[in-house]
Length: 504
Ligand code: AMP
Image: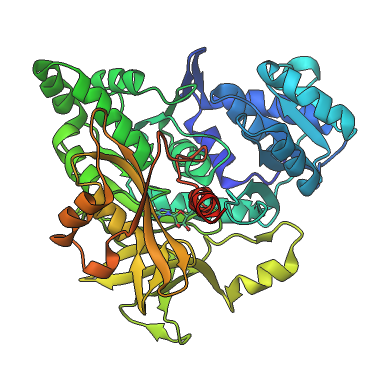
């Protein structure tokens, strides 16, 4: 065992026989997690004393093997680069090349997809189930300032960037949430999120392990199974994205009223249900208060900053708002003149130990992303009665039309209260006269129809005239990434394609 262990592992030693992970294969204690990850680290080291920040890419399904692999990489002194199973080969190749990975670890179910990639780039290929093949060795000292993980951004506009976190960054992000959301050994969280993204990696996995709580991992999100686990009353916490809550609502609506009442009663007993990674529409917040019997806690964060703003655990959780600064995090708003604005609207800048170290091998891009110590998020917000409200991403969700700046998120929130609309995505499309025009892609509820004049008539009572869409497009589904986020550049392309057809 190395002399210096990062706090996450020291704490795991302390929790020892307590259960850490539950998955379809069984229950695993903190002790087992430490022993298995020491074995994994020994195989990864393969005779070396320290991996010294070697990048180890890995693709392992949610469950004990994922955590053992991640901890094994950390304990061997490597940098963990989590991959996503849904990514096409082209993207996976990009992540391997960009990160300069030297080792690729995969679960047997991904062998067919990944082994050929490892051969192409001459990477060492290891299977996440074969960690016991080497005698355990003395593990290296791990310093908090060492690089620990590279998480790739969703890259909806440019090529994904590798966000580098040190052990200290990760530790600060965990501590801030454990403190704010009062995680404890008594908690048992249900993990249903992808494991290549900060939400699933830090908030939903590292936080319970830090607190000595149980993390129960489902192989993937399944609305019926999640309700079953909620019904068991064993679960105390759920971390999810807005689309997951929408799917849980739909599942609840399918069952008879007596069962609905039972599920709501059981759900009310959960200690905490969090929503984040995308805007939680007010309609979903309100509906969940009825279906889940409790107000969701909405928070705001980003791969580069961890979590920054959160509604209170005790106190009023406001619909459409993301609350206040989390412990140890400072936030300011910068207006279009570059000045600090008390209430905004302005770009959110964030400072604190939660902030990432750098974009992997992109020093110029990293420099540009900061004002001194303040990271420029590119998100626009305002402060209303002490609560921050996210208006959206600059350049995507902030539409400049006829001299006004309007928030796509605000318009989407209103349109989602229309009985015919199941989902929608608002964007600005270029327009010679107005600069941009407000356009919306709609997914309608089954059996419903809606035309532009009717939508405009309905919206006039609810939105200022310049915010009302002047173009609509009906789709079967909205393009979304693995986290359920709408890919707005694809929506823009669809409108452009229609324009080209009309001109042609
Ligand atoms: P990611 O780095 O993939 O987690 O994406 C971070 C981005 O998601 C932020 O920059 C915001 O644009 C968006 N986001 C995260 N949480 C929220 C929220 N509660 N409301 C609105 N947007 C959010």
